[in-house]
Length: 389
Image 1 (cartoon, rainbow, N blue to C red):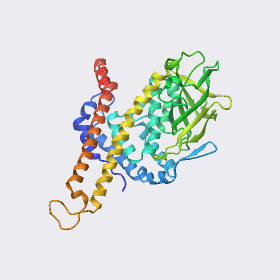
Image 2: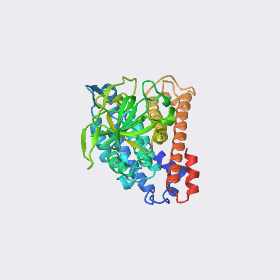
Image 3: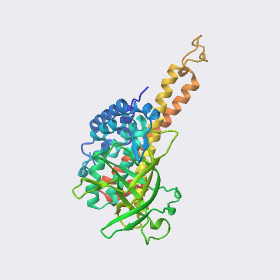
Image 4: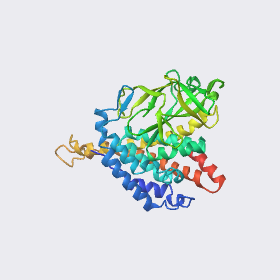
């Protein structure tokens, strides 16, 4: 069984609960009507159902592999990623000024759900890129935005989030990666980052690593952490790619699940220093990284919705096929499909109810986020941002 996106259910929530008509009155969202939503969701469903979902088995049997610092994606993933980015899916909710489609988060959210439901390993790559885009749009200089954001939106480059170190997991006060200023505005980074999702792969030409590190005179603890952008390949002034930067993947994790998604150990600065540039102000890196993390948190919530719906679909299909026992109401003398048994129907109804409620909560939250970013009244923006958070 493959994946069939529940478009009818999604459109119901968008229209009746999340209030798409109200979102379409916001500046810049005038064309975001129900017809637009229907068209976008229909195309997303085709990609996810026909291209991404069938790759799950291949991803489990032939995970991403590492050899001599090079990570090769699961067979089929590179072509699927090409179709994903050529369709403009990375940029659905990102600004038109940076070559995104500029659609509301409310319309992008069902697409994210489909992506996660169809292939979670694949979906993690655009998830991290979305977070990198949000961090750069919020804290990056205009030059950094112009250099990186259009490439990330186009899918020519992807993004990562580099927080965790061998001795620093949840306690980021223990981060030891250091960033040494070079006098020309750049820094050289030295250290190790672990559990970096899609930290190395062959699906895009470049990878923009957003890295937490400490400058020489930084205060102790989380107040001394800065955020840097460290590309896999250095970027020339004209936007073309230069030489390989001193950041290398030394291994990937061997995992129980989502095996097609490479979880990398990245080493910075083993050959003279990985060149990076400060994002925002020194010692405010954790603040900026939380922007990226908050974007990721919403996306992780959508992982739950997507996987729940996919599990429900599979459970229903199995319940229709599995024959076991006669019905308790005596309506048949022979064994029947288990979907006819009341307790099985109860469990399936519970699955569906919880999934639909979670979807509704997420879509309504997305609508509040849209209002928080686009409403002309500042007080309204603050009100809806508080609701969203």
